[in-house]
Image 1 (cartoon, rainbow, N blue to C red):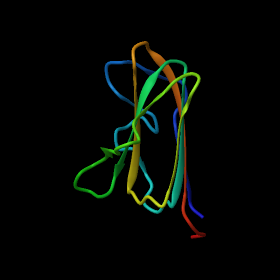
Image 2 (spheres, rainbow, N blue to C red):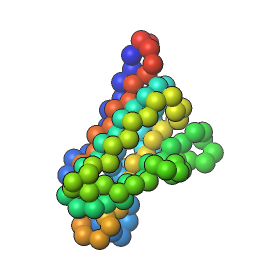
Image 3 (cartoon, rainbow, N blue to C red):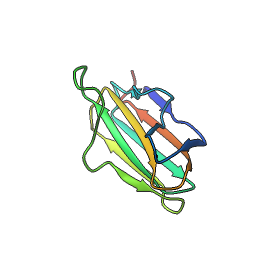
Image 4 (cartoon, rainbow, N blue to C red):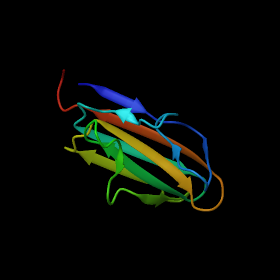
Length: 114
């Protein structure tokens, strides 16, 4: 089984520009052989989390309809996905109003032993 993990801890997020939560770049995390994955985002202030996927080389990572939602200190953002092929996933957050401290964990696994 192949496992991929990513995430960042205690990232400062403002309301001015989205911040990448899986890594410090804008390319997201490659998951070409992942069968299922789990994403958890925690925060101390309200943030809007956007999950984007790349299905090929031509369009880049684009937001997935229905996967953008708010996370709060009382209600973290949790997304569990299975049987959703993608080359990469990118997760960003932007603060709703006040600067927030955000952490993110990501785990992807293949469907079988490789």
